[in-house]
Length: 496
Image (cartoon, rainbow, N blue to C red; front, side, top):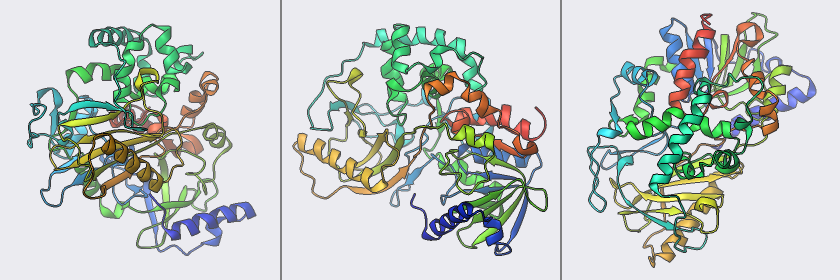
């Protein structure tokens, strides 16, 4: 998302004021249109922020949710075709069938569907329009998107993969505490900071990699990621539910959950297209933390907060203008890298709509594509000549325009290799950035206790500062909702 010009001006002013030793609050004193007082100010309206806000309201708290986008739901994106009204999810697709998920959907009467009960189309046959678009079945074709050449998968057979996954499940049982956050033993087991490829080789279970790769889109260079990140993202319970049945929204519109949650929270408590300009949490006349925000329609507002719940990626860039404590700075400055992830729908690809074309390289380990790259071009089935695209890069600084250009060029390469001349250029129906997708610290930082430092931040500044979101657990709605229910919300309410 490109920041509006007025946000850039305000953020630049905040940076300049900080450099000069001035207070942004002093510069803008009494310039805000309103003082909004709430028990809890939630920074970020993604899966973890919305769920926590709803839970806190249920517990009798007043909340304000600040979200930079014009919608709630974070990585949950749904395209609704204007002609047919058919929804197509391009972000979050599935959930584990645990009580935290069932309860949250049930609260808003949003129906769920167990994927194990679904009858999909036979390959080559039309889509079953009574089930979500993401379940459309198509054949797989493997192509190197760099040059259009056909490739042959060098993957272990299904029996070898199943045996490796069964062995891996036994190993992961020893690390089942990872399902609940980053409360790790001391010393940190070496397995957790080994590169994932080395971890698989150590236990002779490299045959498990294809399954992990297919379920871990957006995680970047999976083989070289520290193992802790990989086995939290696709975890012990995923090994069970990928076979017995994930859940998805029954109509193929996961965004419906957040539309109803937003209505429940109330428009007076949800500040869309708004950004934190500055935070003053330690030296206010009221003794309450304050957030100065720039809103979409009403300029500056001052939020007076009993507590603050930070859910956005805690990068130093995102927290520019915040009065970080020494402890916060010491932790957040250790993030050394992240990766980029983008999703969308395009029209006018013109390929065979009974086939999905996957980007595979003949010379790489397990045929993984060379990043930055498009993972695949996959037909939706429910909309004619409309295709899913998913793109990843180890460099999170790629602009949206550059990513689109990459995707269009790689689609053109596949079209040329398929002897297909497009009648019209590729048309973008929806394009969304999930960047930064996955914050990472070095293996040495993991070994030396980074996550103990991270979790120790909960309840800081005299029990006014709390944290949730992917950096404090993993990039999965299911896991984050359980983390909120079991850890974060009870701490905020003084129950843990």
